[in-house]
Image 1 (cartoon, protein in one colour):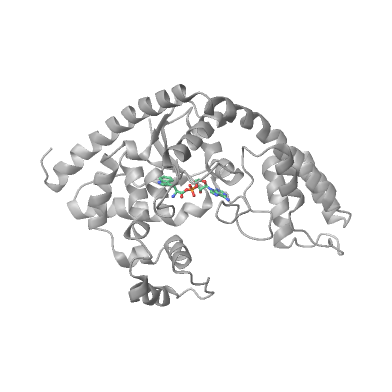
Image 2: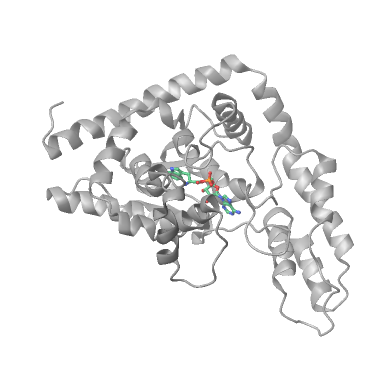
Length: 352
Ligand code: TYM
């Protein structure tokens, strides 16, 4: 059976982007593959170096994984830091990872810029400017080596189980490209055909980007535009009613500007096809009333989130059950990781 791996950083609650970009695929895949789904607590240190309470954030994701329907009888659910073998593989992979290629990844540049407090540049070739900033005396420890090597840790997460499919949203495409590259490089360096190359996976074969409703871009925690699975009805309504719109089209069948297209994309994701078609037709006839559309969308999002929200509260109250799931998952994940690591050590020439 093919192996599937994916993870989510414990930096808050799960939002609709996480759900439709990743978790929804987890639920479908757990019935067909050997699945391992983890909580990437080491990764969260790259942007949250002083987590107030890392255990609490990990438990939040664990409860939400379970509430969404990831079944510990079908899939292995574990916490990244419970599997120390990952750190050892990360070390080996880092020996063959170039600082140059790591510095060029888009997510590094974006996060480094934030940590250096420099604005988003429009040009593609801003790596030079960023490097200059990083090397300034005052900035010499502003951007961590951990942030730089984020993609090697992610590659280690995946290939340590020899996974071939990785359900992730569109924003992870570059990290996945790096994971494939590091797997290939390991094989080439040691002249082996050991690690398979992992591919991103999403049902429908199209990586999904769940948009934010604030005009442009994706939904995300750091974007401040997230609708969380645990949000209550009132909060959801408030967030949706605030969505950016315009005065409406004046020419039939006109192209939708981004904020409007995003509203429709969200509706396509959570509402029924009939609902989507109804409002789409209204738009095309220039009869759209965004207030009605938003009301409907808020209702549909709430109908989707309400049962999950209830389960989250139930499961979160059951500490014992969660601890049991994490322990059992750690054991299974460690077994799988240790097997790979024994072979890796042999390939490189270390004793076991
Ligand atoms: P993270 O924690 O940022 O996000 C978790 C998952 O949610 C997806 N996602 C989205 N998908 C569609 N639209 C959105 N607006 C949206 N926002 C988030 C992400 O694509 C991701 O699938 N680097 C990873 C964590 C990670 C990982 C791994 C993933 C660490 N090791 C190994 C897979 C395999 C991350 O930061 O995800």
